[in-house]
Image 1 (cartoon, rainbow, N blue to C red):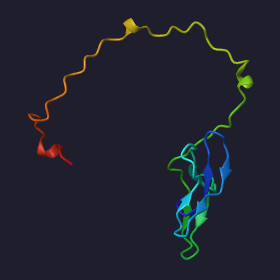
Image 2 (image 1 turned 90 degrees about the vertical axis):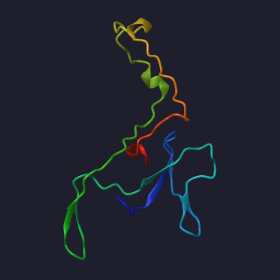
Image 3 (image 1 turned 30 degrees about the vertical axis):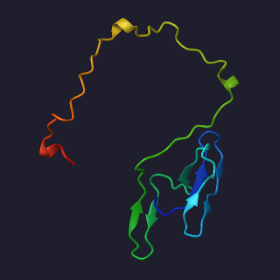
Image 4 (image 1 turned 180 degrees about the horizontal axis):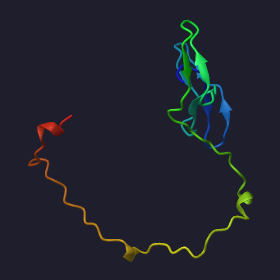
Length: 118
């Protein structure tokens, strides 16, 4: 939902923190170019919630356009008891048909239709 407060989220560590704002209202999560930070709304409104506009009393039902599900990281030792099927047959190189790339067209002789131009 547009206009909700933002929070910074680090997908590698799961850390959340408030962004810093400059005097023009621009925000950033980190000065480091080596860290990955995503900005996410800090307000979670469940799908199907009914909202009412105060000035008109018009009601709206919240519907998700897109959603992001984040899983909490587990220690690698938590996977020690996992097993997998050993009878699965993996594809071999001879299972695939060869594909030959066509030659690149010469830019000097390449014709483009007027409808293909942007």
